[in-house]
Image 1 (cartoon, rainbow, N blue to C red):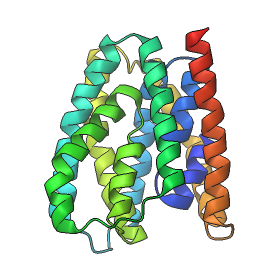
Image 2: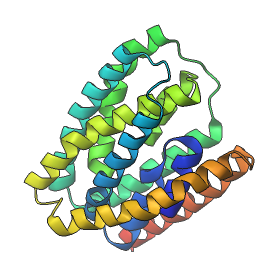
Image 3: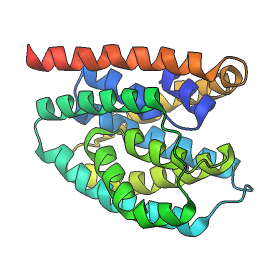
Image 4: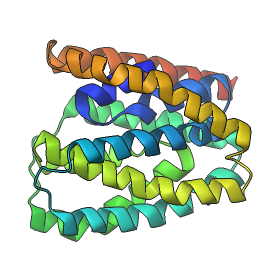
Length: 234
């Protein structure tokens, strides 16, 4: 949670990318996704409030939110119905895909007109990943990064996307018995180190090379992906 909070403080996104694989490596993907849903909701509500005054295309934000929420519902059903071993391997694959995308860093820029044409498919796919394995960054972050949004607009937009999915994940997880009272309590407690680390991440992000910080995080994620694959294949 501390590493995830530092990453979010520095870049505006990334808590699940760090926290979910770590929790999944110790327990399983279902517990990891359920524990993270409340910290995600709380942290993104805070970021929306913090960046509320910055100009943003609200029509695009609503499109992203609606289709992301639909995808999150589908993904949460998959989380409840599919075996944990399969989800763990999916998690490892998504981490590897995320590492490759971050390493390659495509320079293509996506116009708002082109983004609106693709938003339904991209948001729904991101929502499915978020609901099923708790990590939508390989899709959502890459998509918004290609649009070359200013940092405040990027953070505000992606926070709306994450919140819309959380509002669907919470009741669906409760229905399937994934988000129990104990798991919810753990999630609320996990928000404490998360919020303690947010300003640290902001401080680090303003003082060290983003490339160095990215490489440290990506190396850590690669180790986790290898661990998940090893555990499930052994």
